[in-house]
Image 1 (cartoon, each protein chain N blue to C red):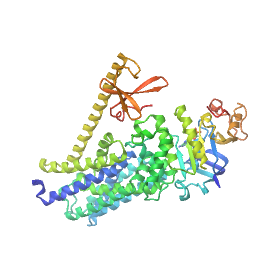
Image 2: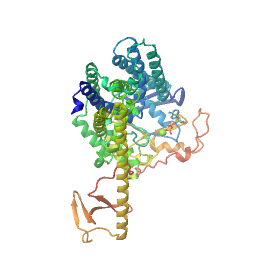
Image 3: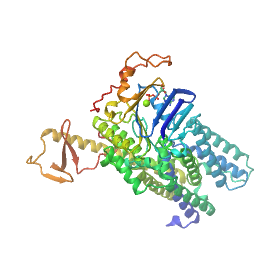
Image 4: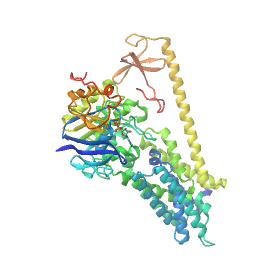
Amino acid sequence: MEVLEYGFMQRALLASLMVGLVAPAVGVFLVQRRLSLLGDGLGHVALTGVAIGVLTSTAPVGTALMAAVLGAVLIELVRARGRTSGDVALAVLFYGGIAGGVVLLSLAPRGQATNLEAYLFGAITTTTTADVAVFGAITVVVLGVVGLLGSRLYAVSDDEEYARAVGLPVLALNVVLAALVAATVVLSMRVVGLLLISALMIVPSAVAQQLARSFRQTVYLACAIGLVTSVAGTTASYYAGTPSGGTIVLLAIALFLLATTAVAVREATARRRHRRRAEVHAAHPHEHGAGCGHPAVLHGDHVDYDHDGHLHAPHRTGAGVHYDEHGEHAPPAGTGGRA
Amino acid sequence: MTAVRLREARIGYGDVAVVEGVDLTVADGEAVAVLGSNGSGKTTLARGLLGLATVLGGEVEVLGAPVGRLRRPPPAQRGRIGYVPQRHTVSGAVPATVREVVGVGRLARLGPFGRLRPADRSAVQDAVAAVGLADRLGDPVASLSGGQQRRVLVARALAAEPELLVMDEPTAGVDAASQDALAAVLADVSATGTTLLVVTHETAALAGVLTRAVVVDHGRIAYDGPLAGAGSTDDGHHHPEGTGLPPARGYRQDQPRVTTDGGR
Ligand SMILES: Nc1ncnc2c1ncn2[C@@H]1O[C@H](COP(=O)(O)OP(=O)(O)O)[C@@H](O)[C@H]1O
Ligand SMILES: [Mg+2]
């Protein structure tokens, strides 16, 4: 493939592969905590780190990582104090980070690489071999921590109060998660840019949570979606001459819309089928039993009745006899629970 | 040993005390109902024991360790407490199965990096079966009804096999059959020596299990004695001395009628 002939594109694709995998693996926990914008806030803080790196002529990736991790720890401590709401703390972080970054970058001497746009919107083709090595290390560490502590991070994200009540180390886990977000932000900086990082963490998870049944499934599916959209977006951006970050995010959003539509259609179909059946049943009400005319089918511990191509499982309730539809998929999530 | 010991405890949020002057000692293995009208401070009292509400004064000791201004229980308590919050349903934006939610109940028992072992998995299964949802183990919690979700939270607390089980209205929104089932489960748990502290309005369903009642009124303990006698504070005029407050609105209506016939 032509796209693989250039060294810069090889590095770009490698970087987008790692980002696509890592960002959703961390993002799912943020979505679960309804703290989707944390990644955005830390992205802004990372800009200050980038500026410090440029000013002191050190590698911006390192200083950005330090700034983002510091910001992450700080915000968790503020949240734990409980005085300021997490919301306000995030806002202060947002604006302080981006303002500091812009001001510091403007102080850099002429001739320095102060291409603000490259950090804000990504410049994946400028990824160096050294960058790829750093990204690889970040990827291994982040995925390793998620693998090791995933169930605890889930517990804290799902119900922080319960976790605290039973004695899980909530603050430590929150700080770990925030540090993971910070590391992911720095990893994603080159590929999608600081302004779009959150999208790569959140959107794949938003797609996956509509299709998955369990948290674990959501994580795996989100990572797969992130990986595919990231690599496909980077490839497409090469041929179309568009920025990689925007292309990847648009692709992910297209998937999101597709999944949302598909789920809506599926639910509408299920509702329609249910209504049609209800009419059929109303037309000839009787209790199934031996000799009712409908073929009996042994189904595990009970007998179903073959009824116009679908199975009825009769059981008595307080209100009379009720038929469960068998030989069908379970009702899709979101159509309301059965009481 | 003593499961719970409060001395002149003041518990609240921020600087505001909701519960004041509470003296309460619960011995290991006791089964206590916490009663009282809405807003009397039952939840705050329970949360104070768990380090979720602020201890503003006095002493609060749970399982032999003090609960102070610290926001989480000391290490000695980790994994020894089960909790059913009053919140009615499971939240969370991302789907999770019954198995996953209940599995969290086992986590605190493990070390910081420990993984669920087969024994933990079977404890999860047993807890889910105990609340009658064995066939829903792999289903997303969001696909369950409100009452079923409530039972999932009960299972999460049971799965911890705790020494102290604090339940805040576990029967709210749960049908009568499931309440009876819960009573049976709590009887089993109690028989293994677990201390029970259950905030409830449905004393009838749990009368066979809970033997002692603590009635909270306006943030103070208005009655502490046998469950069967808890109704005696419901004379409509009597009010504990010293609160200087009129009887709580709705107190008489809310006060559960306690039946002594086993609660069926
Ligand atoms: N998080 C909170 N912050 C401030 N006040 C609260 C909080 N939760 C409850 N309260 C107050 O404490 C009082 C007792 O509430 P609660 O303990 O929930 O009562 P109960 O559980 O008996 O219905 C109420 O007046 C309520 O307004
Ligand atoms: Mg309450």
